[in-house]
Length: 168
Image (cartoon, rainbow, N blue to C red):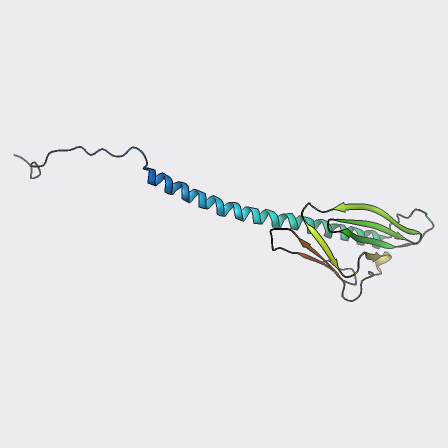
């Protein structure tokens, strides 16, 4: 007895053993889009971190100058000189110095350079003097701000120094 479908010739359907060109192109397009989005996000993150590192470096050195002033540590050329405090001086958009402000003149302790491409600008008094023995700063009531920028990012962090010496 024959089955109901016996009138049709039996053909063997072979399953495909690979991917079609269209499937490969679609997969490559999706991978390309994901890579582009991921790379752009990583580049923006990397730029923000670059600026953040510069800000943290400057904050740490502001606190160093402040701490040296509070402790009364002298770096004067003559031991008989009076220590007035420590200066934080932004000399150009990429460098700054810390100096001991002595009665006989300023003595530069160290010069620092922020990472390449990052620039900073000071609004208010420059140089900033942290007076010795916790007597505040030379800043008026408005204080001072240091603004950082990096090309290709809208991230512009600001470091604020208050008249009392608070660093934020």
